[in-house]
Length: 233
Picture (cartoon, rainbow, N blue to C red):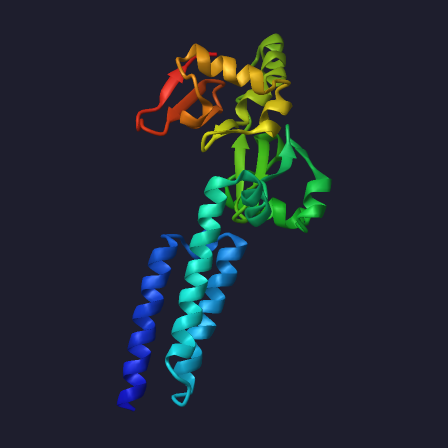
């Protein structure tokens, strides 16, 4: 019995250390591949605890292997945007300008009832209250509220025509240009390079992130700067 307790304590400490090295996340925030690794680690740790005849290394070595695999995948995602899209996927727009994107719901296997439930849990009860709903890669749904309606018809029309500004677009991340967001605003690589040059940045590799935020402002941050720069468009 004493040996079982010792083995259990060793495996518990190992699992805690491994989960700590994997990063601080709640279960609901795990990416699919991280969730799979977490389940596998729990199963591997339970085997030597259930059967004392099994060597302790039978659980330790596979757990450390999974930790190494997770670290390698994380580093690969930091270096390669394609690998990031393959492993984590991309956010899906479920509601666009207060209209449900049924094709996105179908591809993500989400029904209308589930979407409406998520809306209510977030404090929204009408589609008109929401401009965008985005299914994040961790499974959470982010809601962008609609702008308050104006009594001036012309002003309201102008707000509708500029609604796209309220959807943030990450143009550069980790020193690499994101082509998809640029295409959505009818811009190209040369355009973002010129914009960065106007802000005194001669190399896109120096940029940690450059984006248009929800208020339509262009913001960027360099790898060696912790203070965000903010400029008007």
